[in-house]
Amino acid sequence: MIRWSDDNGMSLLSATWVVFLLSILAVGVLSVTLTFRKTVSTLEAGVQDRFDAASALDLFIHQQFYDPIVKAYFEGVVVLTGEEFFVFVEHESGKINLNRASEPLLSALFAVSGQDHEKSKKLAAAIVDWRDRDDESLGLGAESAEYAAAGLSYGPRNGPFETVGELAGVLGVDFKTFQCVAPFLTVYSLEGEVDLSVAPAAVEKILTWAFDNDWESVDWPVIVPQGSAGSLRPDSDLGGHSFVFRVSRSVDGSQGYRQVLRFKSLADKGFDALSAFVPFSVSGGDAGCLL
Image (cartoon, rainbow, N blue to C red):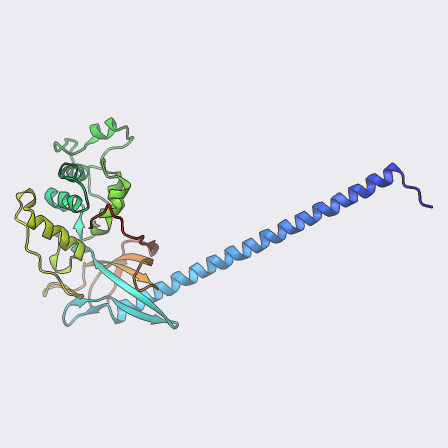
């Protein structure tokens, strides 16, 4: 008969715990390995998705985007590797330029987006104060003193906006307001305020509203709605024009990739990238945003 001593029992208990701990470790290693493989697989799929979208955009630009005979640009659909990619185009000169727009135009933008008259004028003045080179407030605007009084550690740039995103730092512009107006703003357009021949429907709406309401007693232009194709001036080609391209697998263009490009010339269709080729997602409409 075998006699078990306390030492035998402790040895058996220790061995059991070692096996148990090794089992837990093995399960943990397996879980980490599977998670790592899944992460790598997801990253690879994301890289491939981005590559496909970039390839579709390149193909679209060289085959469908611009007709030099009628000097017009188009949106379209590209079939690549058996999949459809929808390409949406926005001419930056058809938007409101943060660095060139007049104060009445900026205030009309905010009024149409849902702000009251006084708040619209304050926001417009604050934008002008942000971009002008002095530190003297325009009455309703905001310079360094107003930013300090609001408890902010920074003041206006006192220089041109470098990106539309910079608008979020202007005193009085909250996140919701920024989301409402940002899609219709630019810092990349050509000279002038808005090129009406390539203005999107929302910008046409702003100008039409300003005209109908005699906003700030300005001589607003009469808006004639444009067709689906954007026409450049007869004496112009692609050279110097900037566009936002959105590439999406969905027909509503609610998500995909976007990039801002500035074309060098019509001859070679060369361009400079003004932004990275990045993912985007458009959420559903906001009842508080009238644009």
